[in-house]
Amino acid sequence: AIVVEPKVDGVAFSATYERGALVRVLTRGNGASGDDVTATARRIRSLPAQLAMRGPDGTANAIPDLIELRGEVYVSWAEFARLNHEREAEGDEPFAHPRNLAAGTLKQLAPEEPQVRALDVVFYNWGASEPADTAPESQRKFHEQARRWGLPVIDHIRVPNDADALWQAVQALGSERRSYAYPTDGAVAKVDAAALRRQLGESDAAPRWAMAYKFAAERATTRLRAITIQVGRTGRLTPVAKLEPVALAGSTVARASLHN
Image (cartoon, rainbow, N blue to C red; front, side, top):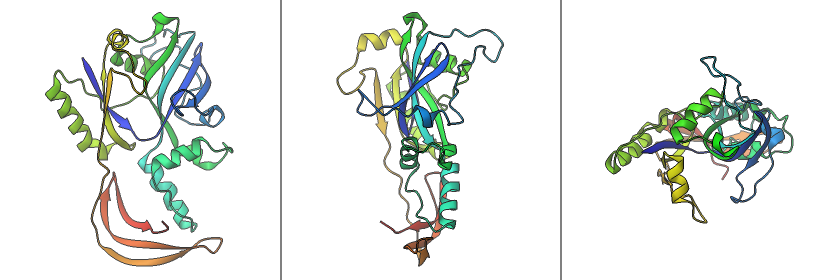
């Protein structure tokens, strides 16, 4: 069985829970070592400080002594639009992309900055688990267990039964992604069973049990109506394009900064 999931366009991170308590959050970095962003990450509203001891049905959850959970920090399209509206109203340059905003906010030295409230997380995989028999048996079991722990997980997953259906699932995610709350830049197909993943192993660059399909960057054509000059609080002048409104990447674009 293969599981196909949206590839969230944010900042990859690893969250370690010991006996259910969040103790460390690291960015992926170069794959071997990353930045410790625990202080900022603790302020993200959707990242639980404690795994839920009981599931929605009231039954007790198994809590590993240690588990490393992997996911993505992102800025939703709605939050991205709201923050850019605030910045433009104050005469500041708008943020270029939700991914850049997520990366900059997560690594900032002052976690009290207001942009922290714009961050969200979603989990899509796991790493180390102690004892070893507490690790999920499959990708679908991981989603099930993560929900019981109160963790946000990837939605819109598909389980195709052959290669043709897999490709159809990738294409479907590509056409649907404009309606998702978070930005996506591709789809990821993963072998479902953890035992088979261990047999397939990993290369130096990537796991042999997963394949990423990147979507082409979205483009749109519209008409330039005018260029105005925006004056910032410090006197900086920024040209701003006024456009015929056009749908792009899940939002309607009517203005664009020309600062670059």
